[in-house]
Amino acid sequence: MMQTTIDAGRELWDVLVIGAGPAGAFVARELSRCGMKTLLVESKSFPRDKVCGGCINGRALAMLRSAGLGTLCEDLGGKKLSSVELRSGSQELHIPLPTGVAVSRRAMDLALVQEAIREGVEFLPETKATVIPKTDFCCRHVLLRRRDFDPIPARCKVVLACDGLNHPSLRQLPLFHSCVAPRARVGIGGIFKCDSCSYPEERIVMAVGRHGYVGITHVENGQLNVAAAVDTKFVHEFGMREAVLQLLQNANIPVAESMHRIPLHGTPLLTRHTPNLAEERLFLLGDAAGYVEPFTGEGITMAWSGALRLVPLVVKAVACWNPGLVTQWQQKYHHAIAKRLRICRALTLLIRHPWAVRATLAVFSACPGLCIPIVGRINNTSFDLKVSKS
Image (cartoon, rainbow, N blue to C red; front, side, top):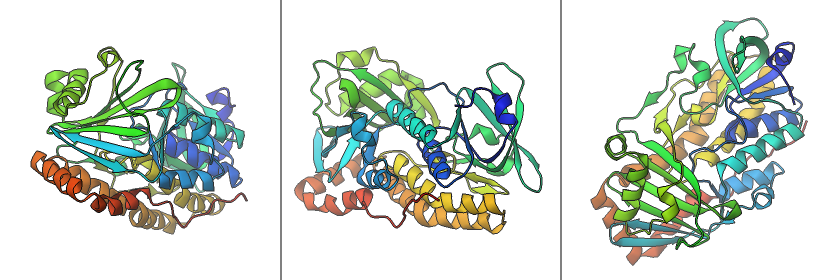
């Protein structure tokens, strides 16, 4: 593993990937498998917790299998998911899931980074990256800063910005300012142990309320993962912990005693999009490109789907830059990712209205078969991509 930013600055990298979340670590691994000399940088130390529901649906599992990581979730001790229990007030609905696994982001992200390193990726944790406007005929320039040391310039043929909602690596490039949706919610999450709780295994237990929603799932090592999307005013009024507890209590979901003590983490405003997804030798991927409230658990799926589609374009960009690749990535993203985002957006808009939630639960409770097409659309395991080594 790369030890210092000085070492990184001595090299000309084919690809420099910023952000070691699901999108960044996954795409770095795939690019290295294609023969690209790849550097992965991450501003945080590893392992670290992230706010996330931790749900890996059937489509995402199929992508892992295609990439040669079919046993990864099982190896991490991920818990099988077979149903969703939705509760709103006194109403509840049980929806069967065809397949799915729950695993914490702490475990998943670390495992993906380790798999990337195993495939030849160089990894620099605790390193802040800033893409600077300067380009030349064959590369882009990125400043790497580790701890309190002076920044070191690094050169690469292509940069991938995969550093999340605010994509801080692009702060010197106003073209990539993200547009936050009106009434966007914040994310809240944490991991806790519960020795005597009533949350069923193999089930996502979800409370839907006027001010947001909370999901609880079993993950590896006897832990439970809690993740929520909550109105900002509600959080400011009550604080993160009390906001989550109230949403659970209002949906008649038992609150484990340990939930009163667990550390919770927050996120920036969630729902947003970045109109421009690429420029010369630079592509955006994952949450940096756009994000919708994670009610359907589609975030990781879309990150990996985008990564698989972007890899061939990056390989072409490294070999010979072509301005047409910018347009190609915009088109591929909007064709494959944006239309799935629209499904997520429609569902998250629906659950903002208590009367609509109650009516929907009543209809689906009376006609459970109506859920099948929606669940099938989200968990669809078919996709038209294969990943191969060069």
